[in-house]
Length: 165
Length: 73
Image 1 (cartoon, one colour):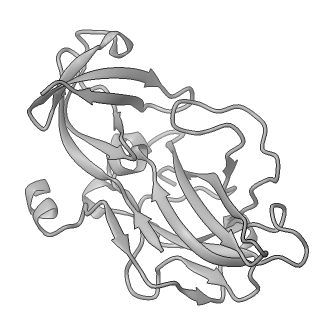
Image 2 (spheres, each protein chain N blue to C red):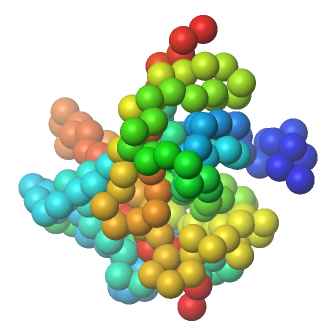
């Protein structure tokens, strides 16, 4: 089965997509807000100061999650470009992916302060024992450029908890 | 815009893990599936059949172990 997935490119490491803009529809419980000066504790794959999405994801869910950059941006500054969104090696291990299907690609919100990303867990991984109990914390790194002159480039890591619910 | 979902590669670490691991930005992720050795004591393995030197670290709050690697071939 995995050989077929590899052959069909399901695990293709990287895709380049045209920039997307739209209305972020993720609710407050599915929104995390990176800090200007992150602190706190990290671990091997989750860096210091990473912020968590409050609402965990069930492996079978397919829902939007947002990153609110308001605390990082100046009042008159907006997200101009989403440079990259990168799934951690832990996500790759358990089949959690950034959704790149039509209508679910990452977008910059029309208000210019948020980025929205959809996640999915590949069906063949959804019953993985790693998702039982407290589940797993999956780091996702997002890099943006702002509309400041000259532009500012900012990268932050957010953490998605995936567990059976 | 680049979306990077990482990839999966065949990893063998004797007494620690055998199967497909996750990889993103040059770091490997695996959940040990053998009990013969302490994962943190592992220094080498086979990645896609090629010998590699490993530096293994554990995550504090989840089951994953992460490793950077250097090819020996």
